[in-house]
Amino acid sequence: MTRAFSVQPEAADEANEAFNWYENQQPGLGGEFYRELVRGFEFVLENPLLARVAYRGLRKRKLVRFPYLIVYQVTNAEVSVVSVFHGARNPVIWKHRAAK
Image (cartoon, rainbow, N blue to C red; front, side, top):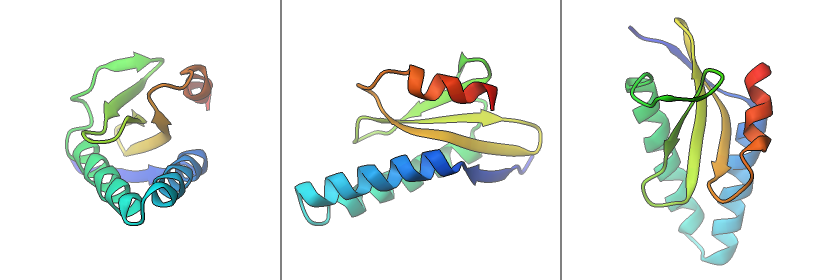
C-alpha cells in the first residue's frame, strides 16, 4: 500500500534548526544530517508499521548516526511526521502533538 507522506510545520522547523546547528559546528555536517534524515523518512515511508506505537498512535524511529528521532503517525492514507526530535530532550514536547 502506498501512503502519502507529509512533514508537519513544527517538524520541518525542528529539522531546519538541527541542520543549522550541525552546519555551524562543521561545514558540511548539516548536509550529512539532512541526508541521514531523508534516509530515515524513506525508511519510515517504506516500513511505517515496523516501529511500535510509542504514545497515542505516534511511532518513532531513531536516526542511525545522529541522536534524533523521527516521530510520526500512520493512517491508511498517510504517514505524517509530527516531530524531528533530539533524543535527549523532554518527550512532552512531541507527545502533546498526538492530539492534533
